[in-house]
Image 1 (tube, helix red, strand yellow):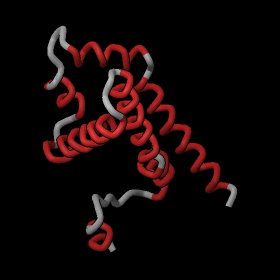
Image 2: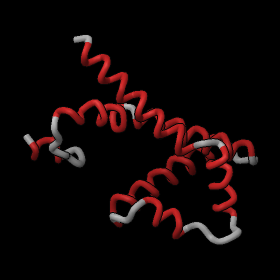
Image 3: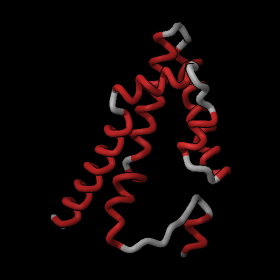
Amino acid sequence: MFTIFSAVGKVFELDEKYLDAVTGLSGSGPAYVYMFIEALSDGGVKMGLARDVATTLAAQTVLGAAKMVLETGQHPAQLKDAVTSPGGTTIEGISKLEDGGLRSAVIHAVEAATLKSKKLGESL
């Protein structure tokens, strides 16, 4: 069975107690990523890019960043630091994301989806 599932992606053998967390992260995660792509695209449109160009650039950016995490095995923070110049444009943008609570919002979203999954499982 492990071989069948690994044909379509990464497979982890986990204790059943972690299934709600997997649902909160991987089950709900695509919607969070879609929202992030949409927000990146909106930022591009705000700055004058055509919607189709902005959306394609946003999606390609997310795809490329995800591939770097998977292919290099480096922690995302290391990769972020590697593309963040002192006093540059990236750190300026990161500062605004931190002001807006991006990390906290994502962590809370995964937590909320996990707890909802657990609650739904208990009602069966």
